[in-house]
Image 1: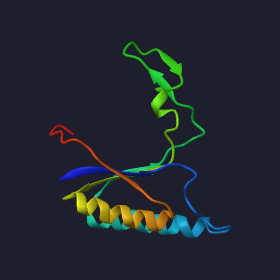
Image 2: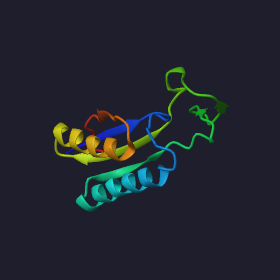
Image 3: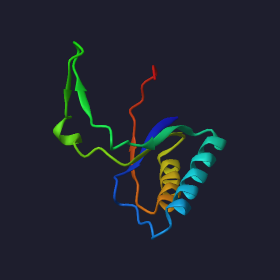
Image 4: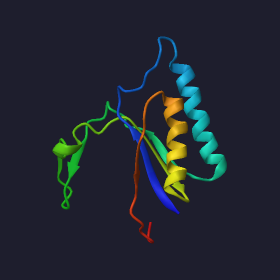
Length: 113
């Protein structure tokens, strides 16, 4: 089975005024379905109030991040699925719940993870 990252950036959700609870409930229902079917690995949203830092091999901490990840934000789900088609199926469920398109990427296989 392959692990898939299903994600979206902040600000792309189309939430009508007063509709946040409805969207949250729909998203939580998809999460629960994934847990109930045994494909859930983990997921959640990036806490954008916590500034990113870089930590080197010696433990030195510096503020900031790699330039290409400066905009790392939004919601992320990792599911372990039998096929790419299954990942697209779950991405469609998440897209419907979150009111926005989802990006799908596969993790490389690593027998130690």
